[in-house]
Length: 486
Image 1 (tube, rainbow, N blue to C red):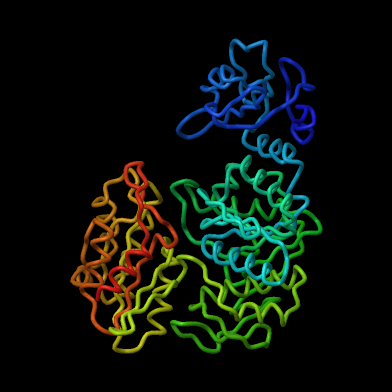
Image 2: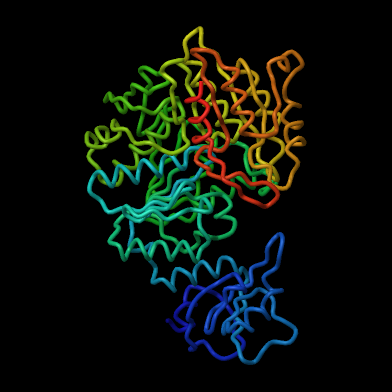
Protein backbone atom coordinates (compact mmCIF):
# COMPACT_ATOMS: atom_id res chain seq x y z
CA UNK A 1 0.00 0.00 0.00
CA UNK A 2 1.41 3.37 -1.05
CA UNK A 3 0.49 6.99 -0.46
CA UNK A 4 -1.34 8.78 -3.25
CA UNK A 5 1.31 11.52 -3.45
CA UNK A 6 3.98 8.92 -4.27
CA UNK A 7 1.90 7.50 -7.12
CA UNK A 8 1.28 10.92 -8.64
CA UNK A 9 4.85 12.17 -8.91
CA UNK A 10 4.94 11.60 -12.71
CA UNK A 11 1.43 13.01 -13.26
CA UNK A 12 0.20 16.58 -13.79
CA UNK A 13 -3.01 16.91 -11.78
CA UNK A 14 -5.24 18.99 -9.57
CA UNK A 15 -6.66 17.48 -6.39
CA UNK A 16 -9.96 18.04 -4.59
CA UNK A 17 -10.85 16.15 -1.44
CA UNK A 18 -9.16 14.29 1.38
CA UNK A 19 -5.52 15.10 0.58
CA UNK A 20 -2.68 13.37 -1.25
CA UNK A 21 -1.21 11.64 1.83
CA UNK A 22 -3.98 9.02 1.89
CA UNK A 23 -3.02 5.39 1.13
CA UNK A 24 -4.02 3.59 -2.08
CA UNK A 25 -4.82 -0.10 -1.63
CA UNK A 26 -5.36 -1.01 -5.29
CA UNK A 27 -6.12 0.21 -8.81
CA UNK A 28 -9.00 -0.46 -11.18
CA UNK A 29 -10.70 1.00 -14.23
CA UNK A 30 -13.70 -1.29 -13.70
CA UNK A 31 -16.10 0.16 -11.13
CA UNK A 32 -17.39 -3.33 -10.33
CA UNK A 33 -13.94 -4.31 -9.05
CA UNK A 34 -13.49 -1.32 -6.72
CA UNK A 35 -12.71 -2.08 -3.09
CA UNK A 36 -11.98 -0.16 0.09
CA UNK A 37 -9.13 2.31 -0.44
CA UNK A 38 -8.92 1.72 -4.20
CA UNK A 39 -8.18 4.26 -6.90
CA UNK A 40 -10.84 4.09 -9.60
CA UNK A 41 -9.94 5.51 -13.01
CA UNK A 42 -12.89 6.96 -14.93
CA UNK A 43 -11.81 6.35 -18.51
CA UNK A 44 -13.90 7.83 -21.35
CA UNK A 45 -14.53 5.16 -23.98
CA UNK A 46 -16.24 4.74 -27.34
CA UNK A 47 -19.00 2.58 -25.87
CA UNK A 48 -19.13 3.71 -22.23
CA UNK A 49 -17.79 6.59 -20.15
CA UNK A 50 -16.15 5.66 -16.86
CA UNK A 51 -17.35 8.93 -15.35
CA UNK A 52 -20.88 7.46 -15.33
CA UNK A 53 -19.74 4.72 -12.96
CA UNK A 54 -18.03 6.86 -10.34
CA UNK A 55 -20.95 6.55 -7.85
CA UNK A 56 -20.80 2.75 -8.09
CA UNK A 57 -17.04 2.74 -7.44
CA UNK A 58 -17.45 5.02 -4.40
CA UNK A 59 -20.25 2.83 -3.06
CA UNK A 60 -17.91 -0.17 -3.21
CA UNK A 61 -15.22 1.68 -1.26
CA UNK A 62 -13.08 3.57 -3.76
CA UNK A 63 -11.31 6.41 -1.97
CA UNK A 64 -9.59 8.03 -4.96
CA UNK A 65 -11.19 8.91 -8.30
CA UNK A 66 -8.99 9.64 -11.30
CA UNK A 67 -11.02 11.64 -13.82
CA UNK A 68 -11.01 14.22 -16.58
CA UNK A 69 -14.14 16.18 -15.63
CA UNK A 70 -15.33 16.93 -12.11
CA UNK A 71 -18.85 15.88 -11.05
CA UNK A 72 -21.42 18.58 -10.27
CA UNK A 73 -21.75 17.37 -6.68
CA UNK A 74 -18.42 15.95 -5.50
CA UNK A 75 -18.44 13.57 -2.55
CA UNK A 76 -16.42 15.10 0.30
CA UNK A 77 -15.33 11.67 1.54
CA UNK A 78 -13.13 10.91 -1.50
CA UNK A 79 -10.24 12.36 -3.48
CA UNK A 80 -10.83 13.61 -7.01
CA UNK A 81 -7.66 13.66 -9.10
CA UNK A 82 -8.36 15.66 -12.24
CA UNK A 83 -6.04 15.13 -15.22
CA UNK A 84 -6.04 15.93 -18.92
CA UNK A 85 -5.85 12.27 -20.03
CA UNK A 86 -7.03 9.64 -17.55
CA UNK A 87 -5.72 6.70 -19.61
CA UNK A 88 -2.19 8.08 -19.70
CA UNK A 89 -2.28 9.09 -16.04
CA UNK A 90 -3.47 5.63 -14.99
CA UNK A 91 -0.57 4.02 -16.87
CA UNK A 92 1.95 6.25 -15.07
CA UNK A 93 0.25 5.57 -11.72
CA UNK A 94 0.25 1.82 -12.42
CA UNK A 95 3.98 1.87 -13.09
CA UNK A 96 4.60 3.67 -9.80
CA UNK A 97 2.18 1.41 -7.87
CA UNK A 98 4.19 -1.68 -8.89
CA UNK A 99 7.51 0.11 -8.24
CA UNK A 100 8.52 0.73 -11.85
CA UNK A 101 9.09 -2.90 -12.88
CA UNK A 102 9.99 -2.10 -16.52
CA UNK A 103 13.04 -0.19 -15.27
CA UNK A 104 14.31 -3.40 -13.69
CA UNK A 105 14.02 -5.42 -16.92
CA UNK A 106 15.60 -5.20 -20.36
CA UNK A 107 12.38 -4.51 -22.26
CA UNK A 108 12.08 -5.20 -25.99
CA UNK A 109 8.90 -4.04 -27.75
CA UNK A 110 7.88 -5.14 -31.24
CA UNK A 111 5.41 -3.13 -33.30
CA UNK A 112 4.15 -3.28 -36.89
CA UNK A 113 1.26 -4.87 -38.78
CA UNK A 114 2.62 -8.41 -39.22
CA UNK A 115 5.30 -10.56 -37.60
CA UNK A 116 5.05 -9.32 -34.00
CA UNK A 117 4.06 -12.63 -32.42
CA UNK A 118 6.66 -14.66 -34.31
CA UNK A 119 9.48 -12.26 -33.43
CA UNK A 120 8.74 -11.93 -29.71
CA UNK A 121 8.16 -15.68 -29.35
CA UNK A 122 11.44 -16.61 -31.03
CA UNK A 123 13.33 -13.95 -29.04
CA UNK A 124 11.86 -15.27 -25.78
CA UNK A 125 12.79 -18.86 -26.64
CA UNK A 126 16.24 -17.91 -27.97
CA UNK A 127 17.16 -15.94 -24.85
CA UNK A 128 15.81 -18.72 -22.64
CA UNK A 129 18.01 -21.19 -24.57
CA UNK A 130 20.96 -18.83 -24.02
CA UNK A 131 20.44 -19.05 -20.25
CA UNK A 132 18.68 -15.73 -19.62
CA UNK A 133 15.62 -15.65 -17.36
CA UNK A 134 13.04 -14.24 -19.70
CA UNK A 135 9.40 -13.22 -19.95
CA UNK A 136 7.03 -13.02 -22.93
CA UNK A 137 3.92 -10.91 -23.58
CA UNK A 138 2.28 -11.88 -26.88
CA UNK A 139 -1.04 -12.40 -28.60
CA UNK A 140 -0.72 -16.14 -28.03
CA UNK A 141 0.34 -16.23 -24.41
CA UNK A 142 2.18 -14.59 -21.56
CA UNK A 143 5.19 -16.43 -20.13
CA UNK A 144 7.00 -15.77 -16.86
CA UNK A 145 10.03 -18.03 -17.13
CA UNK A 146 8.30 -21.36 -17.95
CA UNK A 147 4.98 -20.42 -16.33
CA UNK A 148 2.12 -19.88 -18.79
CA UNK A 149 -0.34 -17.03 -18.27
CA UNK A 150 -3.26 -16.83 -20.71
CA UNK A 151 -3.38 -13.70 -22.87
CA UNK A 152 -6.66 -11.94 -23.71
CA UNK A 153 -5.25 -8.97 -25.66
CA UNK A 154 -2.11 -8.36 -27.73
CA UNK A 155 -1.09 -5.90 -25.01
CA UNK A 156 -2.71 -6.16 -21.54
CA UNK A 157 -4.30 -3.10 -19.91
CA UNK A 158 -1.81 -0.87 -18.10
CA UNK A 159 -2.64 -2.14 -14.60
CA UNK A 160 -2.35 -5.81 -15.57
CA UNK A 161 0.74 -5.10 -17.67
CA UNK A 162 2.64 -3.59 -14.75
CA UNK A 163 1.43 -6.35 -12.45
CA UNK A 164 2.81 -8.95 -14.90
CA UNK A 165 6.12 -7.09 -15.20
CA UNK A 166 6.35 -6.97 -11.39
CA UNK A 167 5.77 -10.76 -11.31
CA UNK A 168 8.59 -11.15 -13.85
CA UNK A 169 10.95 -9.06 -11.73
CA UNK A 170 10.02 -11.02 -8.59
CA UNK A 171 10.62 -14.29 -10.47
CA UNK A 172 14.15 -13.14 -11.36
CA UNK A 173 13.59 -12.30 -15.03
CA UNK A 174 16.16 -10.06 -16.66
CA UNK A 175 14.52 -9.73 -20.10
CA UNK A 176 10.99 -9.23 -21.37
CA UNK A 177 9.87 -9.45 -25.00
CA UNK A 178 6.45 -8.02 -25.79
CA UNK A 179 4.17 -7.11 -28.66
CA UNK A 180 3.12 -3.47 -28.77
CA UNK A 181 -0.13 -3.05 -30.70
CA UNK A 182 -1.42 0.17 -32.20
CA UNK A 183 -4.49 -0.07 -29.96
CA UNK A 184 -2.29 -0.21 -26.86
CA UNK A 185 -0.40 2.90 -27.96
CA UNK A 186 -3.59 4.91 -28.54
CA UNK A 187 -5.00 3.74 -25.21
CA UNK A 188 -1.71 4.51 -23.38
CA UNK A 189 -1.38 0.96 -22.07
CA UNK A 190 2.43 1.15 -22.40
CA UNK A 191 2.87 4.74 -21.21
CA UNK A 192 5.52 4.79 -18.50
CA UNK A 193 7.09 1.54 -19.71
CA UNK A 194 10.83 1.90 -20.28
CA UNK A 195 11.90 0.06 -23.43
CA UNK A 196 15.54 -0.73 -24.07
CA UNK A 197 14.79 -1.86 -27.63
CA UNK A 198 12.07 -1.24 -30.20
CA UNK A 199 11.58 -3.33 -33.35
CA UNK A 200 9.58 -2.27 -36.41
CA UNK A 201 8.33 -5.05 -38.71
CA UNK A 202 6.19 -3.51 -41.46
CA UNK A 203 3.09 -1.41 -42.10
CA UNK A 204 0.09 -2.35 -44.20
CA UNK A 205 -3.53 -1.20 -44.05
CA UNK A 206 -5.15 -2.76 -41.00
CA UNK A 207 -7.26 -1.64 -38.03
CA UNK A 208 -8.54 1.33 -40.04
CA UNK A 209 -11.95 0.70 -38.47
CA UNK A 210 -10.29 1.93 -35.27
CA UNK A 211 -7.71 4.45 -36.51
CA UNK A 212 -9.93 5.83 -39.33
CA UNK A 213 -7.02 6.83 -41.59
CA UNK A 214 -3.71 5.24 -42.55
CA UNK A 215 -1.93 8.45 -41.49
CA UNK A 216 -3.34 8.02 -37.98
CA UNK A 217 -2.18 4.40 -37.96
CA UNK A 218 1.35 5.34 -39.04
CA UNK A 219 1.58 8.15 -36.51
CA UNK A 220 0.47 5.84 -33.69
CA UNK A 221 3.29 3.43 -34.56
CA UNK A 222 5.70 6.36 -34.83
CA UNK A 223 4.80 7.48 -31.29
CA UNK A 224 6.36 4.28 -29.94
CA UNK A 225 9.74 5.22 -31.41
CA UNK A 226 9.32 8.89 -30.48
CA UNK A 227 9.11 7.81 -26.84
CA UNK A 228 12.29 5.69 -26.82
CA UNK A 229 14.90 7.27 -24.57
CA UNK A 230 18.60 7.94 -25.11
CA UNK A 231 20.59 4.76 -24.50
CA UNK A 232 17.93 2.58 -26.16
CA UNK A 233 18.01 1.28 -29.71
CA UNK A 234 15.57 0.76 -32.59
CA UNK A 235 15.73 -2.03 -35.17
CA UNK A 236 13.81 -1.12 -38.33
CA UNK A 237 12.88 -2.89 -41.56
CA UNK A 238 14.66 -0.90 -44.27
CA UNK A 239 12.59 -2.58 -46.99
CA UNK A 240 9.38 -0.99 -45.70
CA UNK A 241 8.81 2.39 -47.31
CA UNK A 242 7.70 3.97 -44.02
CA UNK A 243 10.82 3.09 -41.99
CA UNK A 244 12.55 6.49 -42.16
CA UNK A 245 9.44 8.39 -41.11
CA UNK A 246 8.89 6.18 -38.08
CA UNK A 247 12.29 6.96 -36.55
CA UNK A 248 12.86 10.53 -37.72
CA UNK A 249 12.27 11.93 -34.21
CA UNK A 250 13.55 9.09 -32.06
CA UNK A 251 16.28 9.46 -29.45
CA UNK A 252 17.22 5.81 -29.86
CA UNK A 253 20.23 4.50 -31.75
CA UNK A 254 18.84 3.19 -35.06
CA UNK A 255 19.94 0.01 -36.86
CA UNK A 256 18.32 -1.48 -39.94
CA UNK A 257 17.63 -4.93 -41.34
CA UNK A 258 16.50 -5.97 -44.80
CA UNK A 259 16.69 -8.30 -47.76
CA UNK A 260 16.71 -5.72 -50.57
CA UNK A 261 17.81 -2.26 -49.47
CA UNK A 262 21.15 -1.36 -47.85
CA UNK A 263 21.00 -2.25 -44.15
CA UNK A 264 23.15 -2.98 -41.11
CA UNK A 265 21.84 -6.54 -40.93
CA UNK A 266 21.47 -7.99 -44.43
CA UNK A 267 19.93 -11.31 -45.41
CA UNK A 268 19.79 -13.31 -48.60
CA UNK A 269 17.51 -16.26 -49.31
CA UNK A 270 19.67 -18.98 -50.87
CA UNK A 271 16.94 -21.61 -51.07
CA UNK A 272 13.28 -21.69 -50.12
CA UNK A 273 10.90 -24.62 -49.69
CA UNK A 274 7.64 -25.22 -47.89
CA UNK A 275 9.58 -26.86 -45.06
CA UNK A 276 12.15 -24.12 -44.52
CA UNK A 277 14.77 -21.64 -45.63
CA UNK A 278 18.48 -21.70 -46.43
CA UNK A 279 19.64 -18.18 -45.56
CA UNK A 280 22.72 -16.04 -45.47
CA UNK A 281 22.87 -13.40 -42.71
CA UNK A 282 25.68 -10.87 -43.23
CA UNK A 283 27.54 -13.53 -45.22
CA UNK A 284 27.00 -16.46 -42.82
CA UNK A 285 24.83 -19.39 -43.90
CA UNK A 286 22.25 -21.20 -41.81
CA UNK A 287 19.07 -23.24 -42.16
CA UNK A 288 15.67 -22.61 -40.57
CA UNK A 289 12.48 -24.66 -40.53
CA UNK A 290 10.52 -21.42 -40.99
CA UNK A 291 9.18 -20.98 -44.54
CA UNK A 292 8.69 -17.92 -46.70
CA UNK A 293 10.19 -14.50 -47.29
CA UNK A 294 8.11 -13.04 -44.44
CA UNK A 295 9.87 -15.41 -42.05
CA UNK A 296 13.25 -14.40 -43.47
CA UNK A 297 12.40 -10.88 -42.27
CA UNK A 298 11.20 -12.17 -38.90
CA UNK A 299 14.34 -14.23 -38.35
CA UNK A 300 16.58 -11.35 -39.42
CA UNK A 301 14.83 -9.01 -36.95
CA UNK A 302 15.39 -11.57 -34.19
CA UNK A 303 19.04 -12.00 -35.15
CA UNK A 304 19.68 -8.24 -35.24
CA UNK A 305 18.00 -7.73 -31.87
CA UNK A 306 19.82 -10.65 -30.25
CA UNK A 307 23.19 -9.33 -31.44
CA UNK A 308 22.39 -5.80 -30.25
CA UNK A 309 21.43 -7.24 -26.85
CA UNK A 310 24.78 -8.99 -26.53
CA UNK A 311 24.30 -12.51 -27.91
CA UNK A 312 27.32 -13.76 -29.87
CA UNK A 313 26.59 -13.77 -33.62
CA UNK A 314 27.51 -17.42 -34.16
CA UNK A 315 25.54 -18.52 -31.11
CA UNK A 316 22.54 -16.56 -32.33
CA UNK A 317 22.65 -18.30 -35.72
CA UNK A 318 23.12 -21.69 -34.11
CA UNK A 319 20.06 -21.22 -31.90
CA UNK A 320 18.00 -19.83 -34.78
CA UNK A 321 18.80 -23.03 -36.69
CA UNK A 322 16.95 -24.97 -33.99
CA UNK A 323 13.26 -25.70 -34.36
CA UNK A 324 11.38 -22.91 -32.55
CA UNK A 325 7.66 -23.41 -33.23
CA UNK A 326 5.18 -20.53 -33.04
CA UNK A 327 1.54 -21.60 -32.63
CA UNK A 328 -0.66 -20.83 -35.61
CA UNK A 329 2.11 -19.33 -37.72
CA UNK A 330 2.62 -21.43 -40.85
CA UNK A 331 2.08 -24.64 -38.91
CA UNK A 332 2.28 -27.67 -41.20
CA UNK A 333 0.39 -30.95 -40.77
CA UNK A 334 0.77 -33.82 -43.27
CA UNK A 335 -1.18 -36.95 -44.15
CA UNK A 336 1.77 -38.96 -45.47
CA UNK A 337 -0.40 -41.74 -46.87
CA UNK A 338 -2.33 -39.37 -49.15
CA UNK A 339 0.48 -36.79 -49.33
CA UNK A 340 -1.96 -34.01 -48.44
CA UNK A 341 -0.65 -31.02 -46.49
CA UNK A 342 -2.63 -28.79 -44.15
CA UNK A 343 -1.23 -25.37 -43.20
CA UNK A 344 -2.56 -23.19 -40.38
CA UNK A 345 -1.69 -19.51 -40.43
CA UNK A 346 -2.96 -16.42 -38.60
CA UNK A 347 -2.89 -14.39 -41.84
CA UNK A 348 -5.80 -11.98 -41.40
CA UNK A 349 -4.58 -8.99 -43.42
CA UNK A 350 -4.20 -8.70 -47.20
CA UNK A 351 -0.41 -8.48 -46.92
CA UNK A 352 -0.14 -11.51 -44.65
CA UNK A 353 -2.47 -13.65 -46.77
CA UNK A 354 -0.61 -12.73 -49.94
CA UNK A 355 2.77 -13.50 -48.33
CA UNK A 356 1.63 -16.93 -47.19
CA UNK A 357 0.02 -17.84 -50.52
CA UNK A 358 3.01 -16.59 -52.51
CA UNK A 359 5.27 -18.72 -50.32
CA UNK A 360 3.16 -21.83 -50.92
CA UNK A 361 2.87 -21.15 -54.66
CA UNK A 362 6.60 -20.60 -55.02
CA UNK A 363 7.51 -23.75 -53.11
CA UNK A 364 4.87 -26.20 -54.35
CA UNK A 365 5.39 -28.79 -57.05
CA UNK A 366 3.67 -28.38 -60.41
CA UNK A 367 1.04 -31.03 -59.74
CA UNK A 368 0.08 -29.67 -56.32
CA UNK A 369 -3.12 -27.63 -56.00
CA UNK A 370 -3.65 -24.88 -53.43
CA UNK A 371 -7.01 -24.88 -51.63
CA UNK A 372 -7.57 -21.89 -49.37
CA UNK A 373 -10.10 -21.62 -46.54
CA UNK A 374 -10.52 -18.17 -45.03
CA UNK A 375 -12.92 -15.47 -43.87
CA UNK A 376 -12.70 -11.97 -42.43
CA UNK A 377 -13.49 -10.79 -38.90
CA UNK A 378 -16.70 -8.93 -38.21
CA UNK A 379 -16.84 -5.39 -36.81
CA UNK A 380 -13.39 -4.71 -38.19
CA UNK A 381 -12.03 -2.75 -41.18
CA UNK A 382 -14.31 -3.70 -44.09
CA UNK A 383 -12.08 -2.25 -46.79
CA UNK A 384 -9.71 -5.21 -46.68
CA UNK A 385 -12.39 -7.82 -47.44
CA UNK A 386 -12.60 -7.48 -51.26
CA UNK A 387 -8.79 -7.24 -51.42
CA UNK A 388 -8.38 -10.49 -49.51
CA UNK A 389 -10.97 -12.16 -51.74
CA UNK A 390 -9.00 -11.10 -54.83
CA UNK A 391 -5.72 -12.33 -53.32
CA UNK A 392 -7.16 -15.72 -52.35
CA UNK A 393 -8.67 -16.22 -55.82
CA UNK A 394 -5.47 -15.10 -57.57
CA UNK A 395 -3.09 -17.47 -55.79
CA UNK A 396 -5.37 -20.46 -55.11
CA UNK A 397 -6.76 -23.20 -57.30
CA UNK A 398 -9.91 -23.33 -55.17
CA UNK A 399 -11.22 -21.09 -52.39
CA UNK A 400 -13.65 -21.85 -49.58
CA UNK A 401 -14.90 -18.56 -48.16
CA UNK A 402 -16.32 -18.89 -44.67
CA UNK A 403 -16.66 -17.25 -41.26
CA UNK A 404 -13.77 -16.03 -39.14
CA UNK A 405 -14.93 -14.27 -35.98
CA UNK A 406 -18.16 -12.65 -37.25
CA UNK A 407 -18.77 -10.98 -33.89
CA UNK A 408 -21.96 -8.92 -34.26
CA UNK A 409 -22.09 -8.96 -38.06
CA UNK A 410 -23.95 -11.52 -40.14
CA UNK A 411 -21.45 -14.00 -41.66
CA UNK A 412 -23.19 -13.93 -45.05
CA UNK A 413 -22.79 -10.13 -45.17
CA UNK A 414 -19.03 -10.45 -44.55
CA UNK A 415 -18.76 -13.14 -47.22
CA UNK A 416 -20.59 -10.92 -49.72
CA UNK A 417 -18.03 -8.16 -49.06
CA UNK A 418 -15.20 -10.62 -49.76
CA UNK A 419 -16.86 -11.77 -53.00
CA UNK A 420 -16.87 -8.19 -54.33
CA UNK A 421 -13.13 -8.50 -54.95
CA UNK A 422 -13.40 -11.68 -57.07
CA UNK A 423 -14.01 -11.39 -60.80
CA UNK A 424 -16.64 -13.43 -62.62
CA UNK A 425 -14.23 -15.95 -64.17
CA UNK A 426 -12.61 -16.69 -60.79
CA UNK A 427 -16.01 -17.31 -59.18
CA UNK A 428 -16.00 -20.75 -60.79
CA UNK A 429 -13.42 -21.89 -58.25
CA UNK A 430 -15.07 -20.30 -55.21
CA UNK A 431 -17.33 -22.07 -52.72
CA UNK A 432 -19.04 -20.23 -49.84
CA UNK A 433 -19.92 -22.07 -46.62
CA UNK A 434 -20.73 -19.91 -43.58
CA UNK A 435 -20.03 -22.66 -41.01
CA UNK A 436 -16.23 -22.66 -40.60
CA UNK A 437 -15.88 -26.32 -39.60
CA UNK A 438 -18.05 -27.42 -42.53
CA UNK A 439 -15.89 -25.30 -44.84
CA UNK A 440 -12.70 -26.93 -43.55
CA UNK A 441 -14.29 -30.38 -43.85
CA UNK A 442 -15.42 -29.49 -47.37
CA UNK A 443 -11.91 -28.45 -48.38
CA UNK A 444 -10.43 -31.76 -47.21
CA UNK A 445 -13.26 -33.79 -48.78
CA UNK A 446 -12.62 -31.95 -52.03
CA UNK A 447 -8.86 -32.50 -51.87
CA UNK A 448 -6.83 -34.94 -53.93
CA UNK A 449 -3.39 -36.49 -53.27
CA UNK A 450 -0.59 -33.86 -53.27
CA UNK A 451 -2.96 -30.97 -52.49
CA UNK A 452 -2.03 -28.20 -50.06
CA UNK A 453 -4.84 -26.79 -47.93
CA UNK A 454 -4.31 -23.42 -46.26
CA UNK A 455 -6.65 -22.54 -43.40
CA UNK A 456 -6.04 -18.86 -42.72
CA UNK A 457 -7.18 -16.12 -40.37
CA UNK A 458 -7.45 -17.56 -36.87
CA UNK A 459 -4.12 -19.31 -36.33
CA UNK A 460 -3.52 -19.84 -32.62
CA UNK A 461 -7.04 -18.83 -31.54
CA UNK A 462 -9.03 -21.49 -29.71
CA UNK A 463 -12.44 -19.83 -29.96
CA UNK A 464 -14.92 -18.35 -32.40
CA UNK A 465 -16.61 -15.07 -31.48
CA UNK A 466 -20.30 -15.01 -32.56
CA UNK A 467 -22.80 -12.47 -31.19
CA UNK A 468 -20.65 -11.78 -28.13
CA UNK A 469 -20.25 -15.48 -27.25
CA UNK A 470 -16.84 -17.14 -27.55
CA UNK A 471 -17.26 -20.84 -28.31
CA UNK A 472 -14.49 -23.45 -28.47
CA UNK A 473 -13.01 -23.51 -31.96
CA UNK A 474 -9.44 -24.48 -32.83
CA UNK A 475 -8.42 -24.62 -36.51
CA UNK A 476 -5.51 -26.88 -35.63
CA UNK A 477 -7.68 -29.52 -33.99
CA UNK A 478 -10.18 -29.43 -36.85
CA UNK A 479 -7.49 -29.67 -39.53
CA UNK A 480 -5.90 -32.62 -37.75
CA UNK A 481 -9.31 -34.28 -37.44
CA UNK A 482 -10.15 -34.13 -41.15
CA UNK A 483 -6.59 -34.72 -42.32
CA UNK A 484 -6.49 -37.93 -40.28
CA UNK A 485 -9.93 -39.00 -41.57
CA UNK A 486 -8.88 -38.90 -45.25
